[in-house]
Amino acid sequence: MSGQKKFAGRWRLFALWLCFAALNLGAIGGAQAGKPGTVRPAIATPPDPEDQTPDAAPFNIWVPTTLFVGQTFTPKISFRNMGNPVWTGYSYHVGSLYDYWGQPRLDFGGTIRFNDVLALQPTLVAPTTPGTYPFAWQMMYDGGGFFGSTTQVYMINVVVPKNDAALGAVSAPPLLMRPGEARLVSVTLTNTGNTTWSAADGYQLGFVGDAMTWGGHRVPLPSSVAPNGAATFSFYITAPAMSGIYTAQWGMLRESVEWFGQQTGVYSIKVQPPQPPQISVSRTPSTMQANQSFTLNWSTSNATSLSRVCTANGTGFTSNDSMALSGASSGTASAAWVGYPSTCIWSASGPGGTSTATEMMATAGYGAEFVIQSVPSTMIAGQTYQVSVTMKNTGALAWSAANNAQLGTTGPANNITWGLNRVPLSGVVLPGQNAQFVAIVKAPVAAGAYNLQWQMTEPVSGAFGNPSANVRVDVLAAAAGAPTLNVSHAPTTLTSGENYTVTWSSTNATRVTMQCSDANYSVVLRNAGQFSAIAKPEWAGAPAVCTWTAAGPAGSVTLQDTMTTQAAPAYCN
Image (cartoon, rainbow, N blue to C red; front, side, top):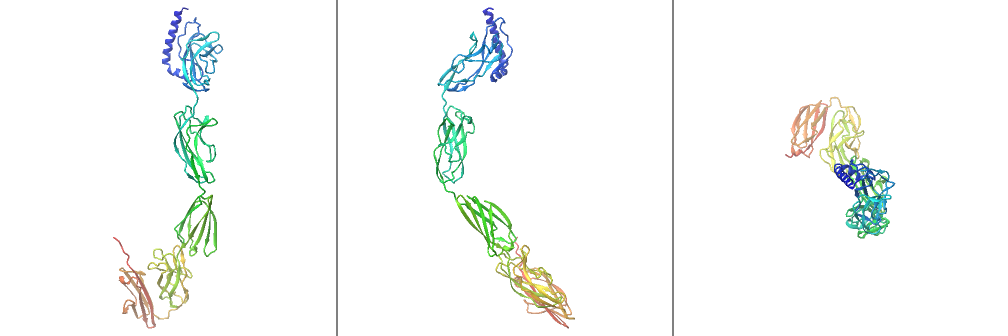
């Protein structure tokens, strides 16, 4: 075949190749990114079948622009078969035009036909001497030498690897630490060398001197860092167990290769002796109240153990408990604790020694002491009588109507032998003060000997304090025809400025009289009746005693009715 035919055939092939390359960019891109092997692009018109001259054109070349001396690398080298002869791995090869890269030729397997692409990714080695080296390849076959077009000549810089680092921000350790204390430190370093830092290649932050003083001598690289990139190492250091002055300094290294770059300053850290334990104890309320709830809170620092020994004064009671280092508890103060303050010694131990804290506990409660009473020793069955009892507040809490502190019958408790079992307070009785209770009792209807005794009481604590002296009262049967007299007023305690009502009745009486302590005259009344009046303000705080007498043919009977008046409450508009 003539040279013109060859030229025309090759020109048509080149034109078709450009067209298909433009239309099939995605397919070509896939070939560039693929592993070594055959890539089948679009079909092009083959050369004249009679032309058996091998031909090749570079298809895709990729090579790094910079390498380290002796570095292995895998470039991409591919040629398209532009001729009729089939390339086989037995006789065809890719040859290097410059013998610097460790392999003068590249072999392959399989067959490459017309328009197929031979794509290789060989493993090559950079020269061991720094410099700029050419990189170019061409197809070749046994017995015939090189053929086809060569690749572009790429100039590759081969340099010596350089590790370097510039110090950035540092969150320095404290100047003072306690034994075993852990503190956070951070160090930022910028890669100013030409190598990429990676954990796989042994790059990490190290403690200069390689001592394990602070619990470790290496800090792993958080992620790979390319040249001009930065890494921040955040890590905890733990102070030594022994007190003293220690140093700390950190820098970059490639393990088993070299330390490099700027290092942190040398930090001088004083590890102080362990601090003695601290104990905090609080009780709410600080003075407990009998039958009321309380809360105990405690905490420690610098301690590894905590114990508590409590002793109740005057009882011989002692408790010894192992406690959590911090906590809280709650409970209800027992009425039995009143009058028996307790002392608790808290002991905390730790590396710095042992410390103690003393907690004094007291329980406030109601207390009462009998003072005096006025009770008739003889009564007539069914008749009413006035009695009075005086009690002293010996407790830590005030008595008041608000907390329902009252005088109650006892022997047995809450009995109603005398027609009632409670006598209310008319005011507030502070600790140390006396309270006089005046009550109208009614003798039992059956004659006999009865006990009359009183004791203070309130709803939560129940009966408290010493009871009054027991009085034995002889109740006599009413004589035939003897007068009887009953008197009551409502309300039991009067309020100044408000209405009250007095009601009375009698039997076997021909005359009923009443004389009150605030008047100098006697009033003669019907044998039975009722009247209402308004309590005067001046009566407040001054109990009035009215003496009633019923007289008849068989004699007379007298009783006293004590009326206590309280001041009217004040109101704010």
